Image (cartoon, rainbow, N blue to C red):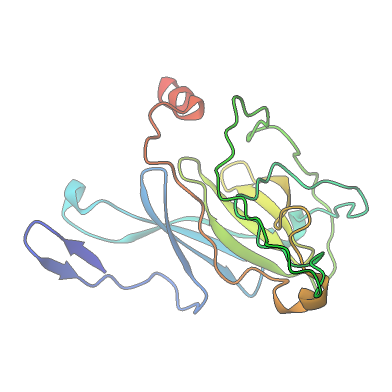
Length: 212
């Protein structure tokens, strides 16, 4: 549904897929819709701008079965990834007889410089996966033609639909997050959204994108 705040009207827009587990999000150039049909057939549509030609329609940008390019990751190799947990609600080491107050870390962590290269680091080689492979859609990259996926081993994968390049971003849960007493109750991600900064203009990646 497209809502116009200027004249208080709305317009219903039919979805491009009948898949009940579709995902809507904003990425480079506008609104996108994604679907993982039958678990591995990744389809990505772009909603064109009606201001350009007066029509609103979904344009298919990507349609590929990504099962054959999913890698066989070495899950014995320790790689937590560049994740930062801001609010630490962790009860795994909390003694039931301990009456001391729990201290939460609610302050955002400031990084002077991020050294991880989102284009070239942790690029994965294609490899055959087991038939029981489970892939979930997490969201769109805010200004690149890429999506974020997770697998059944709690790994986050970045997939560029132009180059078909996959990157391993580490575990979906920050280190020490999981309470093993209730591990299977929250093992999988039910909802997610990539955080998009309000001001993208001064980010180095955005400046480089506009320069090219």
